[in-house]
Length: 349
Image (cartoon, rainbow, N blue to C red; front, side, top):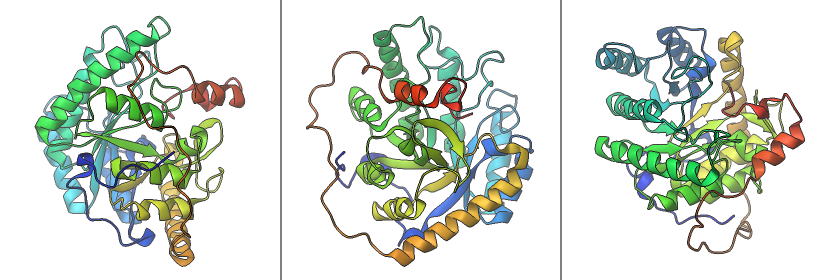
């Protein structure tokens, strides 16, 4: 996996690059505070010392379909400003659009209209909040939708969202998600190419997902996409199992990861993504920040990594093939994890 050129329009206007790992800005995802009122969750996150939040629009956290959205969004913007919190907008709410089916409909369904409208509203909310990015993903291909049809639907839906984001001046962070139609960095590159490499179309990188299924080490994943990063989620994970874990309970060595983020000049939020830990949110959030700060200190103490050869990567890209890529890492991950594991539930929640 080779690194991309150092400049990309998707990262234009982002915060100034950090001086090193110790200057990274840590945030926490509100999907890990599902049992808190949003105002209370924001206060806890700020009181703990986080610099921002990854705000998942959901039924109890700035519902984009409830009345008076503009007024409620303005109130959240004032609250964020008063607490000194930066924000990215996340769109991974489980049952916001369909009370029976998790994450449905997606851009891949026969009728994606409600998903498209949700993403348009998320872009508008992101613009009103001054969000650093609005993040979204592909979704799981429905069993009755042919792969090529699903791919065409995804490209068309993303083009619509990109147009809305471009008009609003909002950066998009598309997240490769294990088990979804676009599950890895290679899939994100292919989708970006299919869209014509729009300026608004950046990358959301989940550090845990890199360990779960990417073919190279996590720091090398970061280096390979540094020019495109607009949003980073962070959590621990094990190879082949899509389960978001507390730090220190998986397999990731975090100081080199934080060093790589600083090395590529990433200055956006690095937000903890633990959507199944709401039952103990304040305690988990406190432990997480302590861990990340200690990891950043170790990264600073270790100093720059010695220069070495660029990580091996694929052959130079040619024209993208028609239709989606064949099933890859997610099938391997599910087989390795066995039935009934969280890897059977794409979206991490």
